[in-house]
Amino acid sequence: MTQNHRPFPRLHVLTDTRDGRDPLPEVRCAISTGMAAIQVRAKDRTDREVFALTTAVLELARPAGTLVLVDDRVDIALAAGADGVHLGANDLPVAAVRRLTPNGFIVGATVRNPEMARAAEADGATYLGAGPVHPTATKLGLPDPLGPHGIAALTAATALPVIAIGGVTPQRVSDLRAAGAHGVAVVTALSAAADPAAVATALAAALDGPPGQRRPVPVAQHRDEVRA
Ligand SMILES: Cc1ncc(COP(=O)(O)OP(=O)(O)O)c(N)n1
Ligand SMILES: Cc1nc(C(=O)O)sc1CCOP(=O)(O)O
Ligand SMILES: [Mg+2]
Image (cartoon, rainbow, N blue to C red; front, side, top):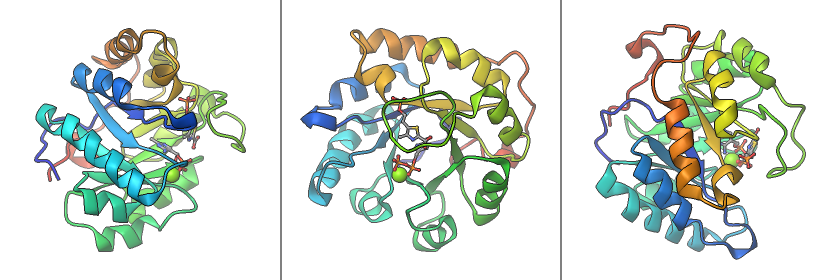
């Protein structure tokens, strides 16, 4: 794990490996913003390939101090030396992963309503991924979009940083921050962009600085800093 005392990242970029694509170009763009975390998400790859991709992402991320998380797989995250894992409903429970991992290891949890947010916080999650906030074609079988109002209800229920995911674009960031989201997670905003560097810059600019109506939450209370 990296020693990182920066604020918890507001821009989470998930790798898009579909159709054999190489996600490293957009990973480089995200890292260059200086405010991103990279989540290695590679549903179509073998364990060996996910491990190799995580190692490649870590090589790019470490010199910049960028955090690297792995979707679903705490074993691969630990084996590769990543900073954390993102857990969904079909993965190991947050509390079980906490027992397996060292202090400072980041554990994200997918939540879709305030009850799930409270439970994940009680179980020891570091941050919450909340979605889908808008319609998305990237993942099938999701419930109806939460919208910024759903994000507001969810952020009111937890002191943890909430990362909104699903159909996020630079233009949609401001409403999400106003709803209390700490940040956003994206796949196709970067992977399908003609100019991913420009989109990464636009996302970073939209996430930078205080939101209009952000709920004040003490840093120590919502684990806004990662102290590995
Ligand atoms: C930041 C963030 N939020 C939500 C998700 C979704 O995770 P999960 O429920 O595990 O679904 P898959 O990504 O595995 O399809 C996420 N990955 N990141
Ligand atoms: C991987 C994922 N999880 C979601 C959830 O709501 O759990 S939405 C999503 C896809 C996000 O992709 P895009 O930025 O291209 O819409
Ligand atoms: Mg997952």
